[in-house]
Amino acid sequence: MTYAETLQYLYAQAPDFQEAGKRAYKPGLGNTLLLDEYFGHPHRRFTSIHVAGTNGKGSTSHLLAAVLQRAGYRVGLYTSPHLNDFRERIKVNGAEIPEQHVVDFAEKHKATVERIRASFFELTMMMAFDFFAQAKVDAAVVEVGLGGRLDSTNVITPALSIITNVGLDHTELLGDTLEKIAREKAGVIKPGVPVVVGEHQPEVARVFEQTAAERQAPLAFANRLRSAADTKKYALDLHGEYQQRNLCTALAALDCLRERGVFSFSQKNIEDGLRTAAALTGLRGRWEQLCDRPKIICDTAHNPHGLQQTMAQLARTPCGQLHIVFGMAADKDIDGAAALLPRNARCYFTQASTPRALPARALADRCRAAGLQGEAYPTVAQALQAAKASAAANDLIYVGGSTFVVADALKAYATL
Image (tube, rainbow, N blue to C red; front, top):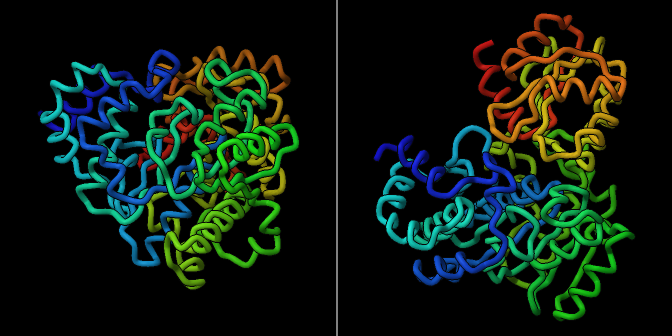
């Protein structure tokens, strides 16, 4: 099989949540444990760091990986979803897994995959762990896919567990209150393994405190250990203001790893890693500026919890007219997101090239009912082109609402 044919096969055998949404979700570790035994428990051959949370877990994972790379370690990084290429999910020292390795993995293990009927995420995760073991990584930063307790990645016993924060997202799967969602995320806390929680949120802090006490896991809240003054000492090549929260979480996690002697790194390693995190790890789509005149900024914030932060930064960003290219997955809190968009913006409602996208016309109707003004465009490329054609040099175009919208925008921008 070619690489393209292999991806088609993997998607056909086991739908990906990125494409199929709830239909692809298989809670529980049954299949993962079967795959883990078949592959010889590859995650036991490297030290791992487990990162959960509603928002910021991807950025936090990349920040940690960058610092460890600067310290001279060989670092695996497993994240999801991807923007443009499946291989973005699995990296070693910033380099994506080779296409041929993906092809060989699928062909070699096809019979087992079909027998176990593994989900796309279960299979992808095991591909990552097997690749990391073969690559002899010293460390692997593993981002939780969804929730925590029943997530496939929860098969690992890490050196450190991290929970960035808790917000209302995937409520149909994880629960409809912050406390219910927190309990799912607290499932990554392992007996005796220290846990860093990024934000002390009064509504859910007790959930983490109780779970950590029950499992005798040392617990620390990052924003109680590190102040805003601490984070401002560091330069980042990630420019969203919300990255200060992720930086706080990453710094607290690094403190924990160093204090426990898990890894060794200098202050210079920390500074260099944070300053070049996106460049080292290939992270994209986080308050990423694509153009200067007009200024075009894209961001993957995709739920009200995340959009609240990006909209606040947008309100503080000087510009002429504000244009917003906006699309969302159908299973998100559309009305909650619409309520956060500025009323003075010209909106270009659109839909990403994924079955999960809410149709542009339906999104436009919902947003107009909330008091927003704009037209519907069938593709992100058309919406972005329309916004760019309307924008003056000192205007600002914000592209977001969904990871998938940002992915399509990055593809489209190269041709505009």
